[in-house]
Structures are given as C-alpha cells and as structure tokens.
Length: 257
Image (cartoon, rainbow, N blue to C red; front, side, top):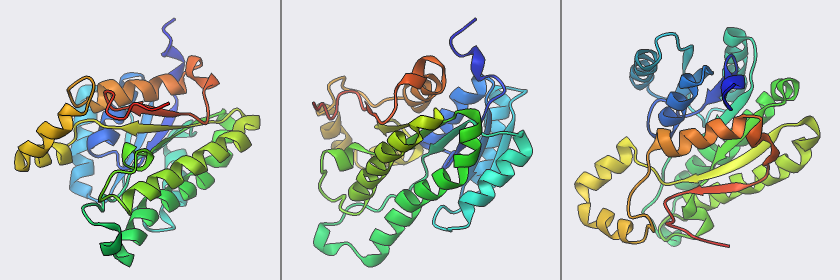
C-alpha cells in the first residue's frame, strides 16, 4: 500500500482554489482520490479550474463554490455544501487572501487593513470553527497559509504580513486545543509561482531578478509539486504526528532558526 492510499475517498475544502497555490493543492489532492470543494470569487475562474481538474483526473470529484471570504456567512455555507455533497470533511485548507501590499505603514488605509484581516485571519477562524465538528469526527487536518512576509517583516506589507502572523498564532493555539481530538493544525509559508507572480514577472523582471538572488535555490517553486505534495503528506498517517508547526516552502528565501 502506498503512503497516500488511505487518502482515497476523503474530502477537502480549499479556499481560493481556482488559481495559484490553491489550484496546485487541488491538483495534488484529486490525484490522490480526494474530493475537493474549491472556492473563489470568480465563477468563470472556478469553472475553468473545475474543468482543468476533471481533465487531469477524469473521475475527480470537484465542487466549485463561488464565495467571498470577507462575508461572515460564507464559511458555514461552504462547509455545509461540502458535507452535503461528499458526506464528510477531512481536510481544511485556508488559502484565500486579498493581497493588499505596496504601502508604508503610515499610508495603509482602514480599508486595506480590514480587507486583509477579513479575507485572511477572520475567514480562517470562521472556516476552522465551522469545520470543527466534522473534523472532530474524522480526526481531520487543517492547513493554513501564512507568509514569509509576516515572519520576516517584509517592507510594504504592513497589512498583509501582520494578518498572516495572526493566522500563525491562531493555528498554534488551535493545534494545542484540538490535539485531544486528533486534529492536526499546521501552517505553510509558500513562495511558489502563480498567475499573479507570473504577471508581476512580466511587468517587473528586474524585481524578480533581485528576488531570485535572495532564494538559496535560485528559483521559484511549483504550487502543485512543492506545496501540494506537502499538503498531501500532512494529511497522511505519516504526517499526522506534526502539529502546530510552520513549514517554509520558499527555496530557502527566509532561512531562520
């Protein structure tokens, strides 16, 4: 039996699953026989992602749900729809996030800060709360996306970075509290290619060149191969003895103790 055979038939929610990191995780999951509910704000992007996943794995079970993470009612609805469709919930991936950057702390607006925390920290907490009874039943897995921008205090990320650090703090506390239920809660700090990073590379190649100089491996990672494979492992029996941890999937961009 392969190390991931036990994942067949499980069900996951992946917020922001229509593109970038979320879609990469969804690809890795459907290849392992995991049913996925992907969320996003664009119905067209979700339809395209669903079609791509079903082409990749013809018998993939994919539920596409239009959702804006800033809406407090969204998490409960998404969890209910997922359980109704798949009959269970084993894995929660909190990935969706509005990206408000490029401003010094003194120039950040109330809207920038609220959008960052509403779409990130508060949505993560709400999804975790809504999913908890189902994850308790399945001894499930939570994986929350944070960022090196918070861990390393990157300039011009005064709304985005603190929000991501709040997610890490919440994750560590949940890991301690939910350990008694055999629910694991971990964090990934990714730096991988996405439609947004590719657009940025086209517009600002000189910036990307400088960024690559600071990455030990000298390249940007792949969402499915590097983040998706870790998300697969963290949901397996082998990965279920790690909780409350932060994993830097960034090619050595931010090497730390």
